[in-house]
Structures are given as structure tokens and as C-alpha cells.
Amino acid sequence: MLSKLAYRNAKRSLKDYFIYLITITISFSLILAFSLVSNCDAVTALSFGMNSFKNVLTFVNCVIVFVVCFLINYTTRFMFEKRSKELGTYMLLGIKKIKIAKMFIIENIILGFLALILSIPCGFIFSQFISLVIVKILGIPEVIFISFNVVSIASLAIYFLVIYTLVLLNLLCKIRKMTIHNFLYLEKQNEKKMFQSSKKRNLIFFFSLVLGIASLILWHSRFQESTFSQPETLTYLIFSMTGLIVSIYGISATISDMILSWILKNPKLKYQKDHLFVARTFASKARTMSFTFGTLSMLILIAVLSLNFSGLNKAVYHSTIELEAPYDVSLFDEKESFDEYIDVIAEDYTINETVAYDIYKDPANQIQPLYSYFNDFDSLITLSAYNSLRRLRNMEPAALSENEYLIVTSSQKKYLVDNNDALQQIQLSNGFSLNLREIDTESFWNTLNSQEPFVMVVPDRCTEGLEISESHLIVDTAEETTNDLEEKIQHDMAHQLCRTDEDGTVHCQYYRVMVRGTAIEEQNTMTAMLASICLYIAFILTSAVGTILAIQSLSDAAKYKYRYLTLRRLGVNDSSLYQTIRKQLGILFSIPVVYSVICCFFMVTSVNNMYQLLLESKWTYLFYFAGSLAVLCHNVK
Image (cartoon, rainbow, N blue to C red; front, top):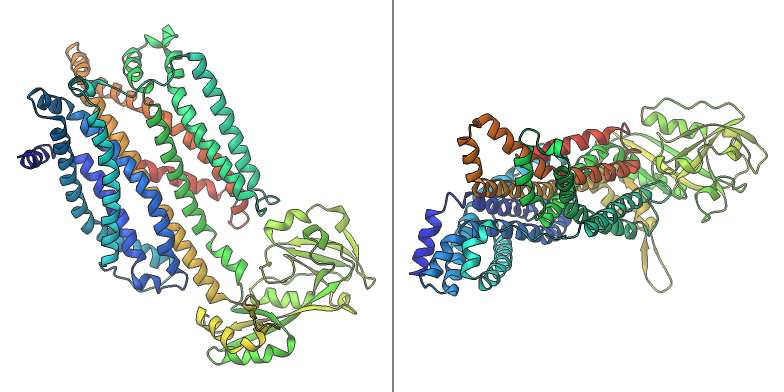
């Protein structure tokens, strides 16, 4: 009997449960879609690094489960409030509270299973679009069809059980504490007001604002060239995010009440047009929805940050590859072994040209201390060798007079030597005196000099009498290289790359060889993973934001229906009434948006301090920030 009543109620209230059904279906569809992609053998075989995609996604899903759990709990609470009078009537008729709880829980389970069933075909369709995004990022012309697999369906079932167990247990505990009076008047209740004292409220607002500013300053301080690579940076960033979260909830809990108090104390503003009606409606919500506002702010902040990181990582794609492997094959080893390396490469590839160059030691040690104290010499390369390297990259040759030199260094480390008067004129250990012509970052790559991220380019004659530090070989091939070539070199040249110590332990120095095809695959994998996961997080969070806004709009429409009808009877036309409602909702939900967007802007600006070194323009991040806000607004709508 109870099951039949629950089924009938679920069927009868399907229209009211529509927002609930849509929320759960979208959430589970996205979880299933990414699970199908990560468990697809064809996707993991695209690149040797894609097998870690599944592990990363599993960790992300553990976080997403809590977000979905909060979202479903929020939606369930809305439906519970909407049905509270009906459930209270059941109690008046003599039905026991435990039976009412079971009936409502059965209704939610029925709708949950319906959403689960709907999410399977929807998730399957979403997975095809995700595979297209990954294939496009990886630059593969073929299309991959994502098929069903038992592991993904089982994972979805586990997530479903975990989420619903937590949500329904919370609901059951809430129903057990309810009385008939609570049921009948629950729909008219809001969250409890947090602050009864204005002094306490103002103090918490001031503390939260100062904490937020301090957290953003700390965040900004770690995204500097001089501090980003320090080991304690991650710890400081965690402290910064923790402080920012506390600040967001503190400001969300106080700002709306402060704004309302200011409006009510200003008679001119209060009695102008429809401001009094908007303020009255705003008062019943803004002063009591502090936790909801804080949660909305957090969701918006993380969603916009995820979209920005996704865009920025795709923007630095080409720069990162050029920094890792600008040539088809580059390696450093003993010069006598270069012919053997060339023979191994020539077995599968047509070699267009090879360039060998040496890095020389200068004991004068004038630039090295600016970078580190691991070595006691400066690294030099001849101008002729440097121009040969530039020619292979289709760059214009560098020009130096007999008494000039230039420094090639990374963009991240340029600040160490920039505007340093001591480097304007140097004297090498072999007696040559040179003037600094320029500092070049365009032609630098990570293994140009394996010792340090810089090298001095000097006229050829200036290396006379200097000891060779290391020898490099660059190979330009007619065909595009792949990761298979690197594996082949590691295998065939193991006798050169690996050493066995006295106790029999083998030490392989595979870092000596860099193949462009491998770097491209690694970057493709990283970009695909980051872009997919960031978009996944962003879509889940934006759907959560949209759902919460929709639920609050529906709740207001039901609670204040009588007020709107009264205004209409007093002669207020529909257009003015709709304008008042839009103003009311706009003011109400701008509170969680404004602070989170401001924080996100400053955070992305700080992150850009590091990304701008790899971007075409230092203002590129503004384009991605604006795009992220546009995507968020579109998804919420």
C-alpha cells in the first residue's frame, strides 16, 4: 500500500519533480560520460600518458560526488518543503511518521532510478562529444567510438548508491525530528538568521574582507618568477585557498544584511518606485541565506577558475612543445657516439641534416652564481653553432661584433640577468673582454645546456683554450618523429645511456635524449587531460549553480504568489511586475556572484604572471576570463 501511494505521488508530482529529475540526470550523465571515456582502451592507446587519465578522473570524481551530493540534498530539501503540508496532513490523518518518511524516501528512490536510467543513454551521447574533443586536441584525424563497458556502469551504480545513501539518511534524520506544526509551516520558514547583533556582523565582515585581501596577496606573491619554483609554494597556495574560502563564507553571511540595513535607513532610496517591495522580499531571503550564498560563491569561483585553466593550458600548447623539443631529435653524450646515434635514427627515418655543437666551460664564473651555486663555471657556445641551431628553426641569424656577447636564457629566468650592470662588460678567463649585446629568450629550450637554463653566445675565437663541458647532437628528419623512436634509441643505445655501479644497480640517463614526437604526445596528453577534467568540473559546478538559482526562483514564486496577485489587483501591469521580479532576483543573486568574480579575476591575473611568458600576449588571459564568464552565464541560463 505504501509503495503504491509513493509510486502514485511520484507520478502525480512528476511536473513538480522536473527540476529534480533534470539535475540528477545531468550530474550522473557527466559522471558516466567521463568514466566511459577514461575506461575506453582506444582512448588510452592514443598516447602513452593517457593511461593516467583514469586515475586522475577517479580522484576528481571523489570530489564531484560531494558536490552532487550537496546538489541533490538541496533539491530534495526544496521538494520536501513543497510537499510539507501534504505530509503534515498525512500525520493529522493518523499515519505514523516512520511510514511518511518511508513513503517520501521511496518516491525519491523511484525518481533516482528513473534519472539513473535516463543518464545512461545521455552519458553515452556525451561521451562521444568528449572523445571528439580529446581526438581534436591530440591532433588525430580518426574518430573514436566510445562503447559501453561494465566497469563504467558499475562505477556509476556505486556513485549512485553512495550519494543516495548520504542524502536519504540526512533526510530521514530530518523527518524524525519533525512535528505536525513543523510540517504544516515548513514552507514558510527560511534558514535561521546568523547574526542578531550588527556589531558582530560588521566585525565578521571586516575580518573576512581583510582575510580575503591577505589571501589574494599571498596567492599573488607565489606566482612570481622568483618564488614560483620554491618548494614551499604549494603550502602557501593551500593556506591562501583556505583563507579565501573562509573569507567568501564570511562576506556572504554578512554583506546582504549590511546592504539591506543601509537601504532601510535611507528613506529617499527606500520609498522610491518599487524599492520598498523589493527590500521587503529581499529581507526575508538575504538575511537568512548566508550559507547558500557562500556555497554559490564557492561554486562560481571554482567553475570560472576551471574554465580559465582549461583555456590557458590550451593556449600555451605550442610554446611548451618548443620549449621542450624544438628539434626532431636532440641529445647530449660523448661525441664519439654520435655516429652510432645517427645510424639508429637512420634505420627508420630520412635524415635531412645534423648539427653538433659543444658547450664550453669558462672558470671566470660571472653569470653562474646568479642562477645557482651547483657549478663553478659559466657555459659558452660559439656564434657559428648558435646560428646553425637558429637556422634549423627558421630564425634569423644573430650578429655579434668581435667584442660582443649575448645571453640565451629562459623567459622564467630572464629577471636574474636583466638590467644587471655587472654583466654589461665581462672578461673571460682566457682574456677576452666582451660587452653584452642583448638577452635572448626566443631561441632557448630546456636542453640547450643541460647544466643551467642559460648559455653565453660568444664569437668563435673566444672559446680558444676553454674546456668542453658537454657535446650535443641535433638531428633534423624528413618525417615527423614519434614516441617509438625514443623507445628505440633507449633500447639500442642502452650501452651508452645506462651505467651499472659496483653493487649491480643499473642507472639509465634517458633524459639525455629528447624526441619531438614524444614531447608532442606528452603535451597532447596533458592538454587533453587538463582541458577535459577542467571542463568536467566547470560543467558540473555550473549545472549546480543553475539548479540552485532555479530552485530559489521556483521557491520565491510559490511563497510570494499572493503578494504578486495583490500587486496585480492594485493595478500593477504585467511588464512592471515582471521587471520587479527580475530586479528582485538580480539583486538577490548578484551577492554571491560579485565577490567570487572579483576574487577569480585577481587570482587569474596572478597566475598570468607565469603563463604570460609562454603566451603570445600578456593580455591573452583577459580573453579567456571573459570567455569563461560568458560560458558560465550561458550554462546557468
